[in-house]
Length: 251
Length: 313
Image 1 (spheres, rainbow over the protein chains, first blue to last red):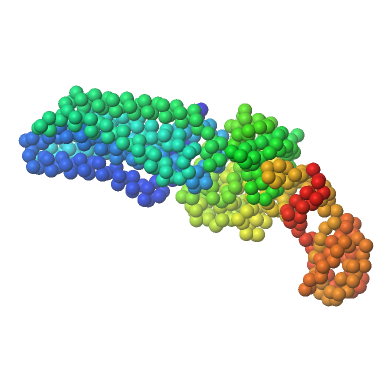
Image 2: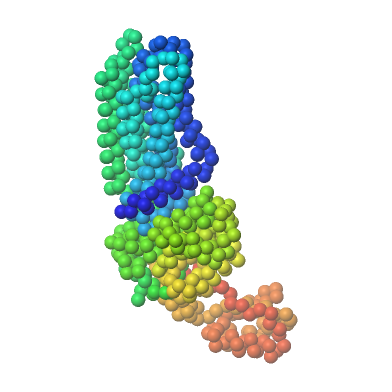
């Protein structure tokens, strides 16, 4: 297997996506929503009460930070839907399947074309949120905390990429069954909501003052990561094993 | 040696048998035409040969490689122009970028790719448009660009699905000339799907006629033509004395039928290779000025009828 061929496929997919302005700016806009919302919130909290800002942010972190993951994963689902189903819809898949690319090279290329931008956007949004938070807290003279905090960073940096891989795998699996890109969007969109688990689960432990049990936060984040990992492993194995050129072309 | 061989090749889609136990033998360096109407099984046959589809029964080899056991090898040595090839380009990429991408996928050495692209685009008259997005090219130019993509890695076998469909007559002629010149220059084997009998007659060494997934007839183009059409129709347009031309034609034993039109007559002649010159001389000797003596193109439908009527298998 030649990895450079997979990279070629990924680069070409990205190049084509970036040549379409509404795709390029649409992706940036979706991912920007997370940092804008979180940094805006940090600004308000810090400005209203700098003394309690750090504690408030620590309390809200487990509930809000997964949003960065969801918003960074949505572009992955959009790109991966286009990667195979979109190519077939635009009639460009057949010539690609006629090249000496093996199934594995092609699928890894398609996976990378979603993973690379999605992870870049995820890291970018985390970095922007962290730096902006630190700057705001320093500016108002409040205690400096990480926002997203360590538990959320663990979630975003582990479960994020694995869920992106799972989404790409789901897309490959359904690519032989759905005819249109919008059908693929709907299926992949549902997968994103796994990230709702770590947003909702810690609420169970929330007391009257709004504090959440950090042990439960860590547990829910680890469970989410394991769910994503399991999903990614199963769907990737199925995608590789069941990918069928015959079915892709016959539809 | 045969470059493409199919034995009992069969492909089914649910209840439909798209390709039904077909046998093919395409000699190396030849231009082979697979003729048939829409839905006859031409595209499915081509997709089986380029390993996009897996057969349900039978076997086939391309360039000595089995389509089941060595699909990657086959994809390395074949160039494919899919059906509606002009729609299969990346619309947002330029002509050059489209070819560059495929050049890399076909493992052409990096330093050779620019020269090959320039050679092909220049040959096709597209070099000036190399930076234009493929989506902005005309249908004819896109078809030529798709052909460049199929040729870029200098494949041994070219599998072309309706290469001139959707092209205007001038562009279609250019593509036909291109196929002939490539066959001569690189000695490549061409397997061409078409529903255009006239086109196939012009460029193919051998043809097969397929309908409802079955090969009805196959063989050398010239032999088939004489076998199927022992008599041939010609349109004779004259500058004067149309009635005289009609009488002369009717008086000939080898003329099977004569139809009069506004400025011409259409005659069906037995053994035209021997008798055409005699008919022309007779017309000229009566002072009839011939403006045009043209072969009437037989339609695919005529051929099918001949095949079915004659039971020629």
